[in-house]
Length: 254
Image (tube, rainbow, N blue to C red; front, side, top):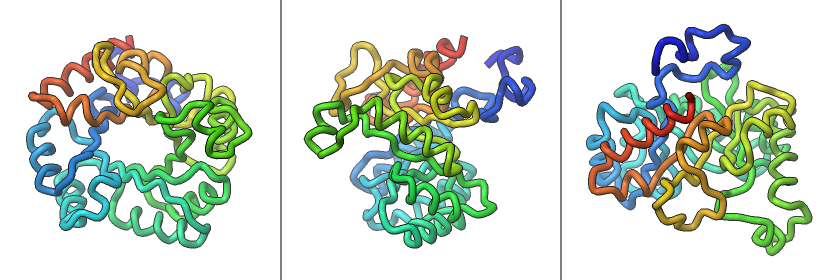
């Protein structure tokens, strides 16, 4: 990014979330692959382009996942552990504490108020950032109604944004269609970080996402981190695709 738009060069009042200066540090590639070997290969193919990776349920129970986490963190990479923790408070608190001990950068927990409160307690004095899940990008109003929710997707997302700030979470996961800048206004905090999945190019399939956005549109709407899986990892040239996404993100930042 040009020096004039480098967030670290701006006063805290205009960069309240202390975002990374380089846009490539705000792209998180989801290692949604079936084996640790495939994950290591993808990390190698993206070396020098991407340094932030999501490890989620695809790899959570794969043999060797502990070694993958160690190698990523020890080599200076950042890890977004998409655990979506959902359990009683004490269990969540201790689970978060273990993630903090490992040097995880971002950890997701369910957007339930008690879970968020326990997670924030569990991070203690570490640099771990707790992101609350709002509503999965695969869900819409009809899907939530089928699950028994009385609220619309927008209403539930707004409620969880307010709770995320109230209980001290660092951020939340929300689609660009949910308008991250508006979520911060509703939550009453310009410090709330927003991580956005459901990122697709205009000509790419939606897959199982119901609420989508292009990289440029997501940044324009106030997303702080973009979580991108299939458009990069399924591409014939993952590094080239990642570079194009980063360029679109930079265009969205103006």
